[in-house]
Image (cartoon, rainbow, N blue to C red; front, side, top):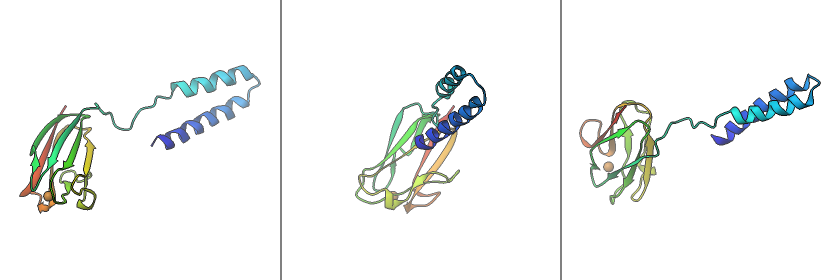
Length: 140
Ligand SMILES: [Cu+2]
């Protein structure tokens, strides 16, 4: 992420250099490059509040089962059980971790950037509707 962003900056600065080099004023060239570097904000792709809320994966339930957070908060799931578990999102199903990456002692985290209800489950000990299930509620 940071690496590709730096490449982008280098590309932009390089472009500014090329354009400025066509002129004959070397002083403007220096000013323009400095301006280009300082005015490009280093903005993370995800706005994070820095708040981390823990959810434990036990044998065999998520505690708490219902977790209420704010936009930009990070939820950190910790496998505090003796068994492997998974954390699989249902709607939308674009985040989570499979059991092979969530062994006892393992962690998984996700930052929620939009408000809504995010149900999830452990496929080892349940399915989308019953068993080891949980919900993250993200308020605006
Ligand atoms: Cu489980």
